[in-house]
Length: 159
Image 1 (cartoon, rainbow, N blue to C red):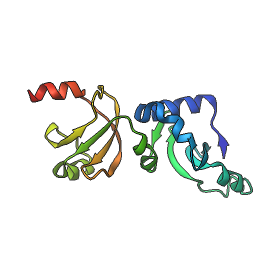
Image 2 (image 1 turned 90 degrees about the vertical axis):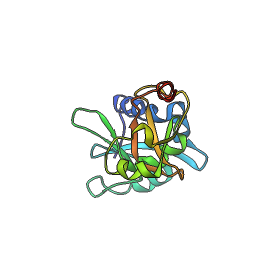
Image 3 (image 1 turned 60 degrees about the vertical axis):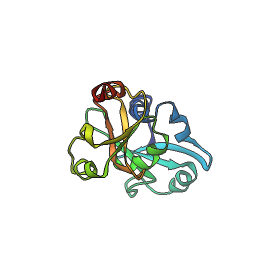
């Protein structure tokens, strides 16, 4: 388990900033303590510094995981977010999409959300912006995605 390099940190923070923007600082400096990101077997873990100090006594080959897995680096050094990061990203998300219960099942099976399945959308969402998808009951659904149409374009289609 080691700290991320400058390049790894930049790539990961660019990906996370796509979803939570400038709220990235709130993710690291939390009121319940300081958290950090550590790399182990190409996976990035989000862990409290208290737990990190306790885990220093365990050898790297015996350690399976530590904290919450935020994502992994691919062989081409791209960062992929994991679903386990959703609970930490959802409260700080800048752009959110709520989908209707009828479209929720289709979305969970991997299909796109049609305009008729949208319940609400955050204002001023730009094209290809990272969004967190919620059900109408404000429960974050599987993963975080990119939006294809802007909010303005969606409003133009309605009129």
